[in-house]
Length: 170
Figure (cartoon, helix red, strand yellow):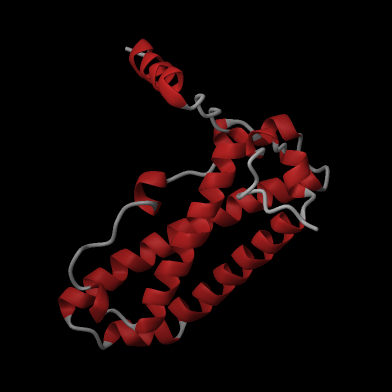
């Protein structure tokens, strides 16, 4: 039975090589690439026509949110392609851990959409916003687990360790 690495209590022991050889990676890769293609088809076709017919304020919101969706998906696809390159032996695992290949644009991709007006956007764009957000957040979690700082221990010692780390950088 396959282990769902995101739910595994031994997540801190997950290696990039174990992840990229897993069914979870294959599914995530396939899902990500399919979502990139689906989004491109929509934004270049029906989405473009829908945007033309929107009121000015809604069209501006559409433009901003479609850019955020595109940014999320390009970051996710880049990360997934790097992981596949490692899996296939085309890239050194140590290179993939460098900041250059980590998941980027988190401030844009994880930002909240405006509180007003989202419901006025075309339903398909709203769906792509939600799906791209879910994919990006899963990959961000994987990136943190595989390459990020390991979490501090739980409890008071863990809290003190986190505080010490935060204030020692000043």
